[in-house]
Amino acid sequence: MKLTQRDFRKLLPPLAATLALFVAAGTLAWWSHAETGGATQERDRAAEGKTRIEARLRQFHSEETDLKERSALLKRLQDSGILGEEHRLDWMEQLRNTQRDLRLPGLKYEFAAQTPLNRTTPSGYAWFNSPLRLQLRLLHEGDLLNTLERIQQEARAMVIVRSCRLAPPAATGERRESIAPLNADCDMDWLTARQPSGKK
Image (spheres, rainbow, N blue to C red):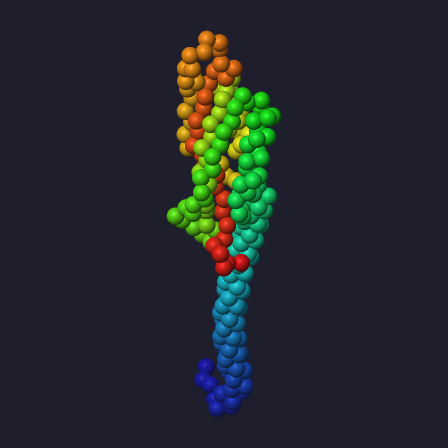
């Protein structure tokens, strides 16, 4: 079949329409691809933003928990008397009360001068040591353990027992038995902490 000029003129509008449809389809495909790419980028940016926000929230909660724990520790230290100046008069009264309450036959003590320790905590508090020599007359070994436990629990300081020596009392030539068959000689450190002068 041979196409004439007239047939070409008749086919021209459908061909033009088909070409226009192809162009429109291509344009739509390109626009859709661009929109998809943009949406993907937006989604990725949103995901990154969400991840950053979640990380900040986790850090905030961690810092909040750490701050609460530090505040609680600070309050416990203040309440226990460890934080602040030494309470030497309170310490001496506590030692006398311990002797009376535990009915110890004898108790002597001697606090040495307070000295700073050679280190400061990360929080800026400096530690100080008040060495104590404690001499006890005891009825039995259990009195020593009870005395040390009570001192460590009730002292307005952090008490560290460095050494304790138990021995029978020295012979005096008397025939009657001593009312206190044991002597104890202990070296202890009474520690307190405070901020260096000038810091608030």
